[in-house]
Image 1: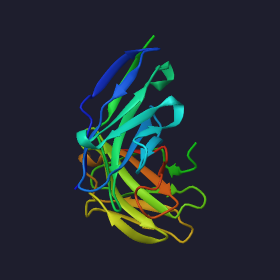
Image 2: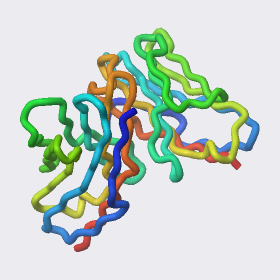
Image 3: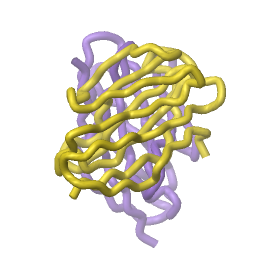
Length: 111
Length: 114
């Protein structure tokens, strides 16, 4: 079965600094990979997804992620973080009949 | 606003009781998914319905059941509740039946079992 690991439980960055959130996955076939964001009291919102093709994926809110098959990674990046980006971020791997989420990374943004 | 609605927003009940959570998918979406989010288990897939039929099962307990009605809304029934069932329960919907279709999440129902 597929699985997802997000090694960082909590990350703090300064506003305007760059951000990288790590995600490692385990899946036997070509993975379908997702990043979701959850703001306090809200449901999850899809930031971006990777199915195939270009390994650098652009998403909403200025986020991007890079799929690296050799490292089984799908890290999320943003060049300049805004205070409104403070939230919990989930990486997920999907198959036909299942979706597995990582434990999440909580992002705090310092003024 | 994702277009997915869930009621109620909060539910407080006692151990041993039964509750029903309701979800209305986005207009046109045929799939409904239920997820449980708790501090110790994280976000777990429970069950999926597609166009009225159960399509996939995840880590759903036997005490839990769900159904999807002809108007495509769905209900998750939780019975013989235990303290450990306290969690945030999310519903999501998508147009297609496979998980890698984009899923739109509702705001969740927070269940507290005392």
